[in-house]
Image (cartoon, rainbow, N blue to C red):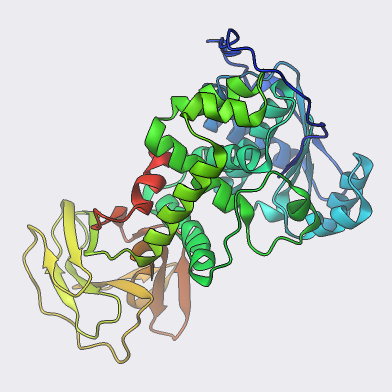
Length: 423
């Protein structure tokens, strides 16, 4: 989330000015200073943020993406409650109404080179890696570009936020998050509520947006990367340092923003209608696990099963049932009581007793959200013999690990867009 605090300048295009502002020696984390604001922020919180910034290499990662460098230090304030968040937002110049809205539901905020990050909205290291990288992308943009439309600004920042998150999160977990965010936009497309890419952040700042525009902006940047390559965004960013946004976009991509928006929207509409044949899973099974893998496809009652054997395996999982793998088949579980059209399941059955946190396990497995033909890892569950249930966010149980999940859907136009996060 950013409010650059800048007014749009009037530019005259100068075709001779095509040189990048990029330096091959990117700014490092010494350009970022963390400070605590309000109650509840500890030295440990500051050290955690510093460690994540260094681990992700956020500053150099952003420089490499944009072809631009931070040239002034950024101050990142950490807050730990909504009251401190709202107070600091007003202190740096945000209106009382916008501050009240932002303090309740935004993961971070940037004004020029000042960043505010609410730790209570960024509880995991993955969240914090995302938000730090997102907001420092805004800082880098603010220090180099006088004006750019909201969709470009937020799209670049969301892309880089996910890029920072991806650097430390297990692949299957990250891809699950990515797909669920994309599904949110496909829901909007299906309802007929999608609006054109926006130049104005007013709706975002006030909290009056009808859906999360930033996710649409992110998919638009991903679409550009999938078509023109990741270096095209540095070309756009550097054009924006000396051209107005329309000229900069035309110079970088050879088309107008309205033309791109129209084709991008058609791709999303096609993605809503796209069909999938199933999913391809890469799974690791440890030597100590003995039993079976039981698969239940979306909206199916009948299981398909494979015998577990130590090693790394690719498993093709047909959306209508059926498996393809070098692992031998096994006896399926009983039919499911009620088919679930929006989920797919992988149960683990063990030939020996499983214990988790000193409690005996009755059954366990992985759930995948299934929407618009996309398989998104949701969580792992563990049912105990005492009736309790535990949920695990990581795609690993007793050493059995889902490394990644890929849809078998070669005609789905959304998949190349999502793969842009791996460019």
